[in-house]
Amino acid sequence: MTARLACLSILLFAAVLPGCLPEARIAWSPDGRYALVRGGDGLYLSDSEGKLSARIAPDVSATAWMPDSRQFIAVTGKTVATWTELAPHLLEPVAGGAVSAQAEDFRRQVLAYKGDWDKFAFSAKPSDIVAALMCLRDEHGKELAPVVGDKWQATKGLQHTIYTVQLFDVSDGQAKPGEVLFETPGPVAEIRVAPGGKAFAYAAPPYPPEGPEAVLALYAVSMAAPDRPCRVEGRVSLFFDWTPDGRSLVYAKAESDEPGTRMPAVTFSTNERQLTYTRQRLRDPEQQPLLRQGVIMRCTVIGEDASLLEKPDLLGLALVSFFDSLPVRCLKNGRVLFAARDIHLPAADNIPAELSLFSLDPADPKTLAALFTPEAWKEGVGRLELLQLSPDETRLCAPDKQGRILLVDLATGKAAAVDAQGANGRMTTIPVWRSKDELCFVVPQGSKLGSPNRNELVLWSSAGSRCLSKNWPEAVTKGLLVP
Image (cartoon, rainbow, N blue to C red; front, side, top):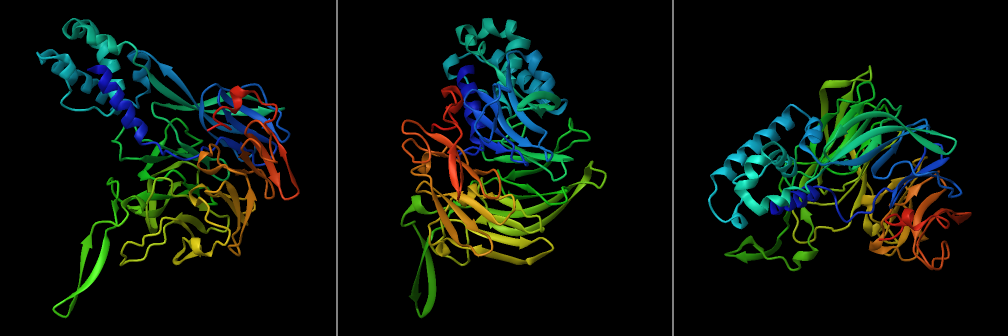
């Protein structure tokens, strides 16, 4: 019974992480000197020629550079096998006390049960079932093991992951561990450092878990007190950004926990000389996008003294059709870019599946406008949820479904294609800019930009390209280059 419940909890926990997206496995420093490489066996530094440092850490899930290029933030994971090790990390007293109370409730249910243990199920599911079962095992195991019998053996292998958010110092091509900022029992999906480096924010599944539809929550951290992260908002998309002054976060938020509904087809007919309509079954349900109402928000979280505000200032900027990877980016001139479906109501069954790019000035939301729509792209439609702004903010890049990288001029909307030769849906690593003229991305084996016998990471510019990963060991390239 316990093994089944543990597996269920892991599935639910994994469900809140965005899936089917390439990862940000390469991150160039602001000065372009080094790249952080999240390889298959851990984190490394690489220079512009592909020379790797010694391995920095074995299990890293997210990274972000500080503005000075001398430090970066990394999230490392470690497993703990006992309740004694886990309990101090559960954001006590709230989470730790809740888990202990749930374990005590489970204990009473187990002692009262008289049936077949293969059919036993707890009457209520805890927010973190693995933690509750570890508490039950370690705090009440001697009492419960004789009651449950052989089924109790399934609890012995239970472990929980703790994530450490830590600064690392970079010098002479190597990185050394620095200050531990905080530890959390939940994974971190995305980190962005504020301009000026006085704060950072991260997106992560809320802890304690709030259910599979909770998606992600957004947290802000002041470097003046990094051990006290502040929850900004729940139900947010993966990609968010800071305003140029480093005090406000801009992000997309879903209006409810509902997973969304498909728009019905609508047909019109006349009935006794009156125009009526009826909702009918979808003509092609699999092609219809899910609609979930959301809003682009700006939240001021950092005060003039660089500390977290006790009462963040919220402002809604635009209504959108929300999806879990809706990208939001802030420009240095104060404008906000985001990609969303261009929906006009009333609508029938013609809801666009592709995304359009929008721009607005937060000081005057009436300036909201589409920079360009998929119909305007003569070169094809890119995956705008993966858009990456160039350092000078004049262009963006986005992979498309044909395995190319589209370079889009933000002033004109014109797109030019870089042939990455067949990355398609098998892409694992998001293309990133090193400078305003250089792009870093993965090409498949046989590409003229790479090697004949394996995928490679290349640094491309209009003047030429060079392969960075040709001498990297397989342990590093696994996951980074291979789907």
